[in-house]
Length: 304
Image (cartoon, rainbow, N blue to C red; front, side):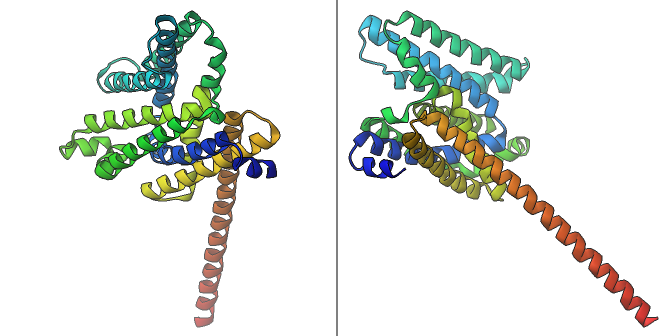
């Protein structure tokens, strides 16, 4: 742990990792709250796994055809946004079972990505970093990109907070008020895909949904309003990524897995403490009611 604080000042890659974790926490808290409230984590999972197709296709074009663009990150962004639009269309207008369609998109995205990776010479060794993340490989340009995308997400939330709030809790009522719920639903999915691409660099495709939802789920236990949930989820995500990075660096453990494990443990602990607190409060309230009832009975006997 102490080695980490000493090495942060000496090594730029550790500073970039800390900055990336802090900046991504903003998007995680905001978008993760919407995903949790709207209950679209399975949709987010399908989007996350189609990102691999964009990563693989971009690297294939670079290695086999010598293209400079798109980069793997740009390919992931394009694939994520395309998947969000397809999933949004299917879930809103398709007549098939939603879970079946999402499973198909999930599987096809992964399969296409693996095909491209298999066809790209020397690329297979980088697969683990995309599947499980490697925050220590974050570069300064990645930190700048995360900051820019954070700004975009914050701007969208400021401009359309009320609309997104409405469709998150009661989409049917929002539609009856004359609001174009479809447009805001697509907007929510696109922002989710952008956030997922940011988090893939930190915890990887396999665990990205856990980091997207665990801070928000924990925050939902401790808050009553959506904006409070967003702020608390961002703070929790910052704590999880920072402490996960510190623990993994000191113990020589995989950073992405450590962040997720720490997040999961904290969620379970807070959920358990909340249940104990509610049970104690309920028991205390019952005792007060019983005492008051006995006092009323005693007063009635005295009056008689």
